[in-house]
Image (cartoon, rainbow, N blue to C red; front, side, top):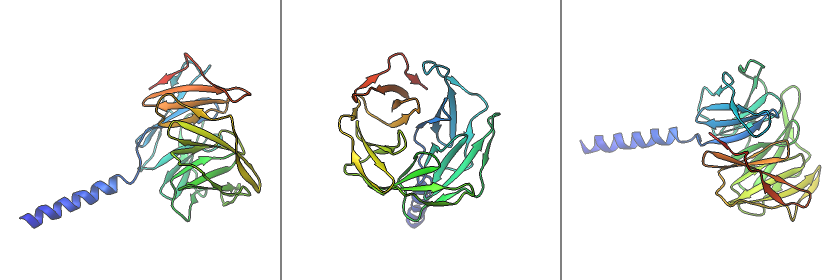
Length: 241
């Protein structure tokens, strides 16, 4: 009887591990220049804003993955990338909010992947540990290494994203530092642009409008930066879900 109990316990433990290999934490990302995407579990819901002050749920536009996955991000235009392990699959939506898998466009890494983020146009940054490699795609769906040099993160890292082409933001705890690079050029730290949050940071959502959303729990707070590198909280624009 004891052997049976131990065996059943081991089986249950293995099953538990197998169901935990895909992340289900909340993610936020800016989508197609007007929507915030909120991912919880296998579902991404989209919220529209006419003025970046009020947010409205866009019914009928949910993306629901058929499988568990690690992360989702906006790639370009109507496309999102959905990563499971080393492979990213891409999905496209139409004006009616219907999502379809884009066959022939998968990206598969040859090494372990901790995170992926969009980088410029038709490119992605793939982070493994403290190393970020860059890849470009072509119209035929093939992927090739980018001309950008690998970025070796000089600090600890809790998250990485690209606010603009040629730039990377690296988050460690409550602080984000920014770096600039170029084709075949070394990456350099940009002094005077650091962002430090008064609250804990769960996710970063950078809007193409120059605004950065900082997720803490279920609330996004938005910040803007001026020419001198000073970040200012945008009052009355919080988005809670």
